[in-house]
Image 1: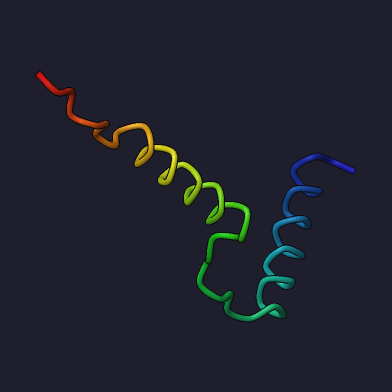
Image 2: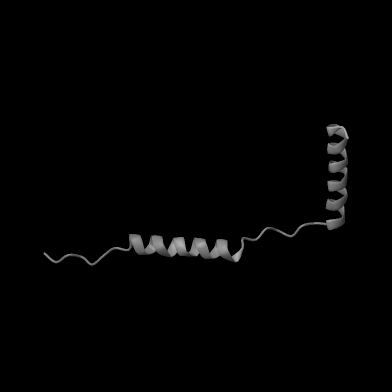
Length: 56
Protein backbone atom coordinates (compact mmCIF):
# COMPACT_ATOMS: atom_id res chain seq x y z
CA UNK A 1 0.00 0.00 0.00
CA UNK A 2 1.28 3.43 -0.91
CA UNK A 3 2.26 5.46 2.21
CA UNK A 4 0.03 8.41 1.25
CA UNK A 5 -3.02 6.16 0.94
CA UNK A 6 -2.20 4.49 4.25
CA UNK A 7 -1.90 7.89 5.94
CA UNK A 8 -5.19 9.09 4.45
CA UNK A 9 -6.97 5.94 5.69
CA UNK A 10 -5.41 6.40 9.12
CA UNK A 11 -6.66 10.01 9.34
CA UNK A 12 -10.13 8.98 8.21
CA UNK A 13 -10.34 6.20 10.79
CA UNK A 14 -9.01 8.48 13.52
CA UNK A 15 -11.70 11.06 12.68
CA UNK A 16 -14.38 8.34 12.90
CA UNK A 17 -13.12 7.20 16.29
CA UNK A 18 -13.00 10.77 17.61
CA UNK A 19 -16.57 11.34 16.45
CA UNK A 20 -17.75 8.14 18.18
CA UNK A 21 -15.99 9.02 21.41
CA UNK A 22 -17.77 12.35 21.81
CA UNK A 23 -16.50 15.30 23.82
CA UNK A 24 -13.67 14.72 26.26
CA UNK A 25 -13.94 15.86 29.88
CA UNK A 26 -11.65 18.61 31.11
CA UNK A 27 -8.18 17.38 32.03
CA UNK A 28 -7.62 16.97 35.76
CA UNK A 29 -4.22 16.17 37.17
CA UNK A 30 -3.93 12.69 38.62
CA UNK A 31 -3.46 11.86 42.27
CA UNK A 32 0.26 11.24 41.79
CA UNK A 33 0.74 14.68 40.22
CA UNK A 34 -1.22 16.44 42.97
CA UNK A 35 0.63 14.51 45.69
CA UNK A 36 3.99 15.29 44.10
CA UNK A 37 3.32 19.02 43.95
CA UNK A 38 2.02 18.98 47.53
CA UNK A 39 5.22 17.31 48.71
CA UNK A 40 7.30 19.87 46.83
CA UNK A 41 5.32 22.69 48.42
CA UNK A 42 5.77 21.25 51.93
CA UNK A 43 9.48 20.72 51.32
CA UNK A 44 9.93 24.30 50.18
CA UNK A 45 8.08 25.60 53.22
CA UNK A 46 10.30 23.53 55.51
CA UNK A 47 13.46 24.63 53.71
CA UNK A 48 12.59 28.34 53.86
CA UNK A 49 11.15 28.39 57.37
CA UNK A 50 13.06 30.89 59.47
CA UNK A 51 15.01 29.20 62.23
CA UNK A 52 15.24 30.36 65.82
CA UNK A 53 16.67 33.83 66.27
CA UNK A 54 20.18 33.59 67.80
CA UNK A 55 20.53 35.31 71.19
CA UNK A 56 23.17 38.03 71.50
